[in-house]
Length: 543
Image (tube, rainbow, N blue to C red; front, side, top):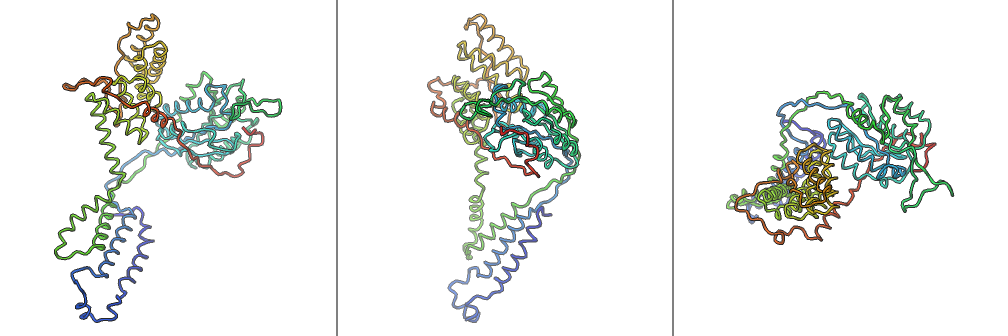
């Protein structure tokens, strides 16, 4: 047995031994006044633990706690893992100029959508996320968990910072502090380029530090006026409106550092994404020990010592000890563990109800889980259950409120959204169904989606709604927490309830749910301190 954190033993055990040595060697007041024989006669009940024995059990309790904190483990074996030493950072400009609408809907929103596409293309790459304006902020260190990157991207807004401007040199300094010193340094800058003209200092710094810079220009040459938060136009002077355009001078930084520059509206966008995602990191093989952790055993022993020290067991009471131990273990069981077990049970019940065509119970089960955990998968499955109940408008609202990172799940999401829109039947919803099926096919080619799309287009062309066949049944995304198939066969003996009997959420509950989904998660970016942060911002405007 070894300890992962032996410093706890070195720092705490000597103090514990000294304190309890003094406590155990100290005589009781009664022993100083009376002889042992007299004390034996004066005691009312001698079948109890003495103070000295109780203190000894307290000592053992603290000893076991210290050993548990030290991380006791038994090594089970060695696992060989591949570790990617290099880091690839994405830096997103969140200055005010990124709110211009020369690129729909805004530069910032379009940039975020493009970066989500990049995350899909670079699944095997380790990516970190930075946000910058005048200063630079770390949102996520390099990670293979692209879901967390997508979460931060979706919630990122320019309002998270107070200082405006676009200081590229400060960004390079901040990124250099985060890169591994012996690995390849790659940085993707997503920005409109700011106002700097030469970028000579930025180019010199990138070459000196060996940073390969890729630049995605998110703006147009014609530009757009910059607006205030109230909607009015921002003016540089009394009569001059601020117009923000793409600064193509930043392309020199990319080209001279060994990277690539491309505008977001360029036809080379796909090739640019492939080039970025194709920059493979160099994995190295390392040995990682596999441990069996024993801290639970020491915590259990500490609980036992505490129970004995705080109790008085006579000869006739020793048989109650096992029952009291079981009760104590149950009481101290972590509430989070209990909640987790109940969560999985609720998910299993909701899935089972769906498979048995009890869609009302299934929708309620997924609704409860989704409210507590804000799970996109649970929302998706709840929408599927509402679809099967005939609550198409509510299902559409839930489908529209979520988005997945995985392409397959997004395909199923938009396929089901198209089915629900078709069920409403009017021309406006049929046109939206065509858009939904097209989105589903962009994520993944599928015969069912293609056939449904063809039928709806034929229907719109002829204007005959009666010619429409029933769309393929809603399909469920494949996930451990999602129903495996939404088009389940009807189970014998299960009677489908009428629409009035199968009431799902009330309108009030639906509005509450959609409001929760629309809430933005607050981010707390970490500001990266660099030397001389104002360097490089001489030509920059405060937007």
